[in-house]
Length: 261
Image (cartoon, rainbow, N blue to C red; front, side, top):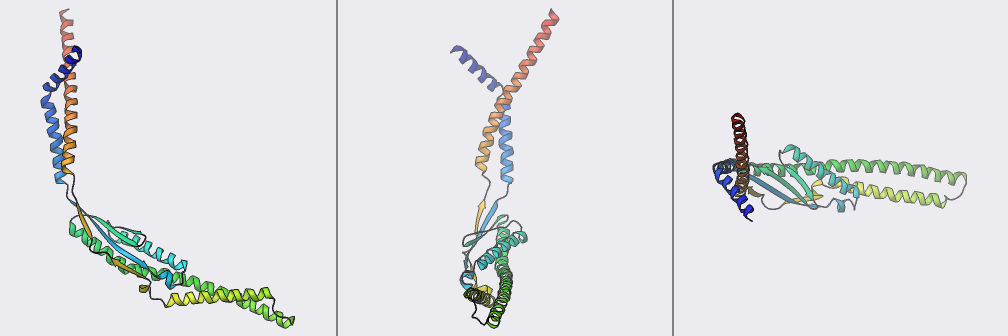
C-alpha cells in the first residue's frame, strides 16, 4: 500500500514538474484545431426529387421491350446529366428520380440543381424517342421476317393444291394461321408505337422546391477531442522528457564517480 502511494506521488510530482509542457501541448492542440475548424466553410447539400409515371407499357400493349427502352433512356439521361453538371449525383428509385449536389455557396447549389432538372426534362423525351426508334426498327425486322415466312408457306400450300389436287395439310394451315396472327400482333404494336407521342408515354413532375441544408463543421466536438488528445500527449511528452533528463543525470553522476575513482 505504501509503495503504491509513493509511486502515485512520484507520478503526480512528474506531472507537476512538466505542467508547462502539458499546458503547452494542450494549448497548441486546441488552438490548431480551432483555427482549422473555424476556417472551414459551410457546405450546402441540395436535393431535388421528381415523380416519374410511365405509360409506355400500357400504350404498347404491355410490351416488355418498350419498358426496357424507357429504363435504358432514363439510365442514359441520368449519366448524361452527371457528365454535364459537375458534382451532380442523379439516381432513380422505383418511381422517383433524385438529383443531389453538395457545394458552396448556396446559390451555386440551387443553380446546379436547376440546370440538372432542365437537362432531365429536355433529354429524357429525346432519349426515349431514340430507344423506341430502335425498338420499332427491331419490330419492322420481325415483320419482314414473318412476311417472308408466310410467302414461302403460302407458295407451298398453293403447290400442294395444284400438284396433288388435295387440300392443304392441317399442320401447314395451322402454321400459316399462327404466323398470320403473330404478324397481325406485331403490326398492331408497331402501328401503336409509331403513332404514339413520346411526351404522352410518361410524366415527370417535380416535388416542390429543392431542399437545401447547411452542413457546418462540428466545431465544439472537434475542439473537445483535440483538447483531450493534446492533454494525453502532453502528459506522455512530459514523462518522456523527465525520463531523458534522469538518464542524462545518471550518466553525469556515473562519469563523475569514475573520475573520482
